[in-house]
Amino acid sequence: MSLDQDREPVNAQKLRSGLSRMWHAFGYSMAGLRAGWDETAFRQEALASVVMIPLAFWIGRSWVETALLAGSVMLVMMVELLNTGIETAIDRIGPEWHDLSKRAKDMGSAAVLLSLVLCLGIWLAAVWAHRA
Image (cartoon, rainbow, N blue to C red; front, top):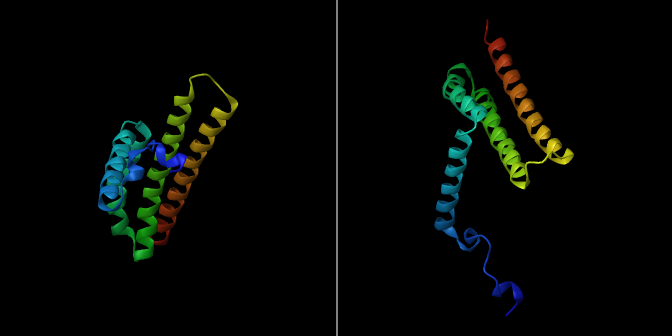
């Protein structure tokens, strides 16, 4: 018996398989969405998506255009969740200021900004193309 087999896994999820693993993973994802809801920026983006995603189906003239419009909105929310995860991990390490912590948080924030610029660009292009 190897040394690795003697130790219990740190994460019980690693022992699960099949539907049990998928069910538990879904639960973790829902917990992540609930945690994201506690963040003001994510909450604002989620509320905007309630309007923008149905609007994407009205504005989009093809499935590709609809997918770009709705997908860009979803992308903003995904990047916001990842940014929040980065910030949370950095904050768990400690409250003291550190150059690398600031850099990680700034880069996460920049990713959110770029996703917002992309989303805005896609929506403006679609509206511009359909104005006539």
